[in-house]
Image (cartoon, rainbow, N blue to C red; front, side):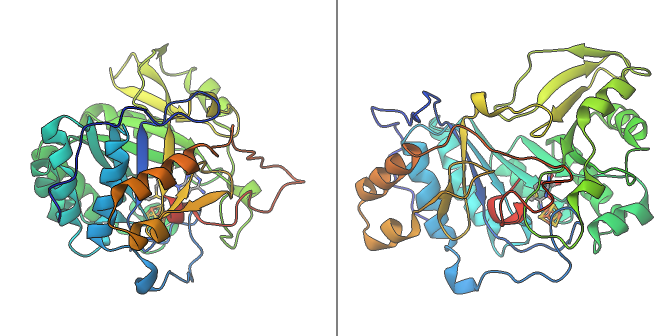
Length: 342
Ligand code: SAM
Ligand code: SF4
């Protein structure tokens, strides 16, 4: 891993055509996963050939170029980021930007299956908070949703994360007829365990072999229902992500809502997404993308890479056009969430 990249932000920050400052990069380090969640992947997925995937050194150089251009928050995601071989080397390498102060936060979104193994190393690399996806506390339902996952493995991982001193936020996708009877239980459990919780509306990304209309549950309805039993206090707490948070009076923990369908959050968008092949998506819900692998491999001059990044940011669109209804049953974008990372 290189240690010599200049970390001082370049004079001009990354500003998009709508005057939004891009300060958050999410990186899908692999499109592979040890689960097959029903809303994310089809059971039978074709993954990228390994030769197309950037090496860990290349990912480090690309992420560091963004840090050099003023990105303050990096989130590694996937696919399942913790199944990529030697991934801790990338966390350790990127952790140097925390030490210099060039980066405010290095974090990860994970399904939790490998946390028991890696929680301590993540904390040592400078990770302080993690997002863990957990849609249900029912073991049978957990295996139905993830197809290949085991709840007790994830719960052991969460225990290890807490012991390592990592703050945990649980992400749960709201699925009609699947976990919509469990939100009270999840809220109560998160209160006991000391985790914040975010509920996410299912997004129409990629063919999954089922229709989204069957899965889609508007969170505006969920919130109205929760308010009958819980005291939801509005807060202006933000994490740099798209969640809108309330504090739950009874537990003292935060509850976030990610509502791309019922409440579009694009006007505050500060982030872009990099795939493991070096393709930069300026919006999760649009197809326009920039290839950064070619400039990365064409030259060891980071100025070439910086120019390509600036050119891409200049094309960042205003927002996504996600719709799920009876007339819109095909995905808004063909790629799966695991390509660009959630
Ligand atoms: N494998 C890791 C995990 O599950 O946390 C990281 C990648 S996963 C693609 C990131 C997040 O995207 C997860 O919280 C997952 O529940 C969410 N997700 C996947 N497909 C989605 C979809 N179609 N709509 C909404 N959220 C989705
Ligand atoms: Fe894997 Fe995460 Fe997608 Fe589930 S949501 S299949 S754990 S990438």
